[in-house]
Length: 219
Ligand code: GRF
Image (tube, rainbow, N blue to C red; front, top):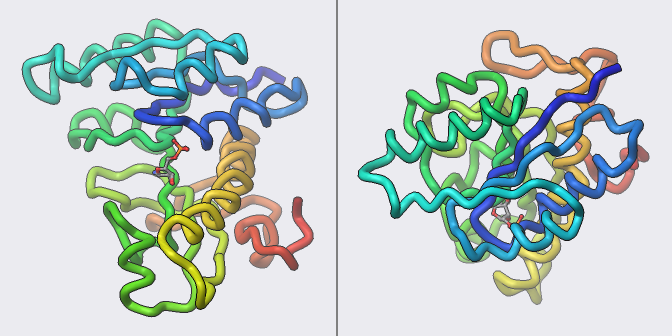
């Protein structure tokens, strides 16, 4: 079966991108990574992607007069590469409603919290300052509102008494690296459908397959 042609958009180090690239290195994985694009020319993730043999492109948003022309260039690059699905992985530009509509149900994002809690930046600092006992990560379809959209996969992560933002971020990141390849697999296999803005996973009768916690026995 043809693998789903997937692009990853990054702005930074690209560890989630690397997790997706590593998963897709298996020819049996249902998605292939055909482009890695960054809005930050020196982003470390571009070098990592190039080392994995993936075509990379830098499209510097500062070269454009506003969001729409930047997004037009991004869209043109994605279209030219025959991309079918976009994965945002630490992509730090807000996307306009127009761009989101063009990739509606064809764009995923990963966020380091259990959405809809803790949207936006500095999630771990806020989690710690409010004393919550669990946080986690979420992979979801992208909608125009920031960090909103139908949830595909989540994992919960405990907040430990000795945590600071760095230690908590590291623990959540480990979960992110498991969740994103799993979510992309579900989408690329055509097992996800969206009903009333919630995701139904074909073949997942219960929570197994959509929550990635240690006792789920999935990975
Ligand atoms: C991750 O925590 C991701 O959830 C958030 O930005 C961070 C990106 O890290 N959106 P990396 O570039 O994937 O290492």
